[in-house]
Length: 459
Ligand SMILES: [Zn+2]
Image (tube, rainbow, N blue to C red; front, side, top):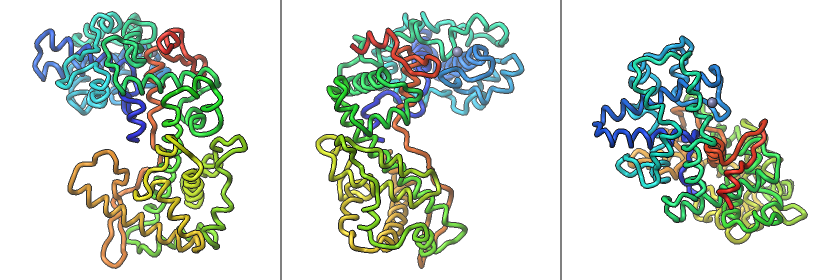
């Protein structure tokens, strides 16, 4: 996740919509120009976000826009269907949003990274007031209304969250994202973002891409495209992406396996019973025999083969998850250079591919059951350690075990909740959505394409 953050700075899993970058910049510029205090600023911010939700609702007749649903729509659903929004009520804290800063908190880090806002939450160096007001300035007028009647908003659908492409604010954000705005610093973050977008654009140009998550991550992780395509082969971020996407298969498999183990803890359960539950899913025989039955992780062309994809069997298949992890670890000795460096991690760090590969190697002649037995106890001990650490300091983003299992004396366990089991996001879906929302990419009948503007900015 830390690697993904470096490759896609300025977009996170909670910043799906391009237009909010413009909305937040504009509100803070307006607040500064009018000398508003904090309460008046947050009030204006929430009213503006409510106005954006209202016009987006109208634009799509209550359905989602092609780039998703405006923030706060769910909480406003009843009022929106009623056809009228009393602004004071809808924008109150606890109305469309629970936070006094509305949804801007989720975007703040990204907006500071892109320079849209500065550290004090004021308009930043890259914010372009003329362009943004040219696109969405009218949202401020709507924000000042006491009441919004939805039937009156039909002429304002150009303010919808989907309507940024081709408008001044969309073009401004597109230039920022692609690092082609003269106000944005030519630093590492800008270069990584631009090169990531260029690589995605090349993939979109050469494949029939319908979604930017699985389809794209498979191309980044497996096969010859990264070495045979001239543009991809020259990309300075392609190898990092290969390492990250291959590693992501391990991270996601650990998450599923761990969630399954936690699910075996019911009321108070003994650790031996959790171990037994996993062993019941695994064949007898040695670790070496188990490994020899795994599919090849390198294709005849020498490129990574999608072993993890073929072994994946959804949630509740711990043996499949362990196979995914073991196949994945085999790559430690197959990959080289930067791909390996990003992928493998250190053998001294628990749960990295390098650590698992070293353990499998050392225990090749042992029984698989003994190996799995030890692994379950290690995972539980690790979870306990992490939970203890978390009680003393704030999570720094690198700990992915929230520690839902606690141990009592004598090996008895109980749990405080279920664990997350979904794939760990590499932010590509959100990046794609922001690129579509700003007009760098477009969704043409379900297929993602690069727009003329995008082509222009990515030369
Ligand atoms: Zn729309």
